[in-house]
Amino acid sequence: MGDRSPGAPVIGPEVVDEVVSRVAALDPSEEDAALEALALRQPDLHAFVLAVSEDMPEGADELAETLLLAVEEMFRTAHGASSAPAAEDDVRRGYERVLSLLEATVASGGTLAALPTAQPHVLEYVQESLAQPLEDEEGEDAELPEEDRTDLELAFRAVIEVLGERPAAPA
Image 1 (tube, rainbow, N blue to C red):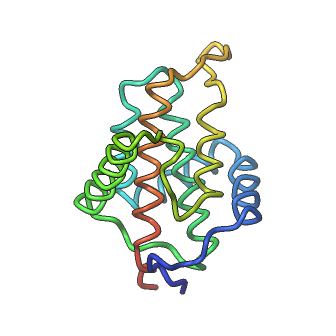
Image 2 (cartoon, one colour):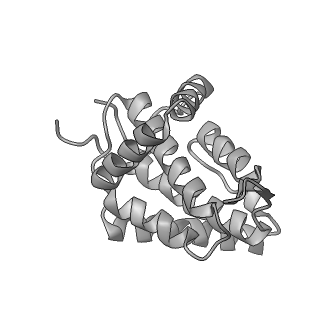
């Protein structure tokens, strides 16, 4: 069982790459099953991510769910166990901390990119994924608006923070 304290080790790029490959290789039915299992393991994180992406362009909710699946799996893989479920209050407090940090950073002349993270390789994966075009129902590429990318990045910064704080779930 991995240590989930704030001093827990950084998830390395090899874990990120391994998980991204595994998630990308899932066929649609396997991905659906994995998303259902994720929603049972982390119902409040799942609901949070869906709520953030709810009014975004077509495809954003699927992207957000797939990102959550990958990010949560990165923590599971790196720490050898699932995280204990995050309660709604934990998620809200994590998001509020990220927003407060952003506010302080902007007030001192910084930007979103200047915000620190305990998991830079995981965040880099999230940022790269959010920069990719979405595919609509007709198979056409659509750009995710900058405001929506920012909202999702802030949400995933909170997800990363919350998962990093969670103890391992009881076996």
